[in-house]
Length: 118
Image (cartoon, rainbow, N blue to C red):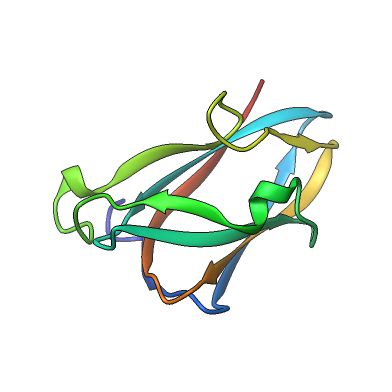
């Protein structure tokens, strides 16, 4: 993360938003690199102000064993698009906004999100 991650991103309505551009229509997997000393943390994820599917209303991020004070406490997760996660994002070519909003009182440190075309 090089000292440029988001620390103590709390729940209960706090949100972070990123603008991104996809080159072509298609399905995209979503990955995140996160850390949390909580047993788990929850977020809702919207794209362009909408929930891509019902499961995006309460996305569970498992505890990683710490607050990112050591490299092993950061975990890369396949958030959407794998067989055991949320469905892939179905996106049209162009610019979009990904918003991640805290739910409940759990903290989550965020290093990055990555979209990968299928």
